[in-house]
Image (cartoon, rainbow, N blue to C red):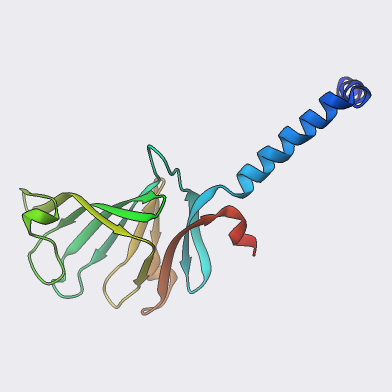
Length: 170
């Protein structure tokens, strides 16, 4: 503790260094405060958040659900980008309404009983989802599973947005 106190005294004696350290500390705090973050809200309540990681490697996450018409599992892999989200890949088990199948939508292939549409490149400024009866909407983020269908009643709106971290406190 004495060493730290001596350091602070020396720092204050040389004002240039003191103000430099103060400026650097302020810049660090502000940069964290404005860091882009991906937020997941259910009925306005914060479910999860993670640094957006915008740049070469944006934050990735997956959504899994039971298709409301086909009644088969679907998995969608997304990545955070500066202007929102990009759908990278969809996996599903049957053809039907609302499921991709055209070559122009990406690289289509079959892996056993699963159809995969890779490199989809669909972009969304934000995502609005709903929990539904029997849809089992689930979020996978940073190795954690969030069973949204157990956390919220059917019909609950789930919003996914990229915002600076300070928005959580406003």
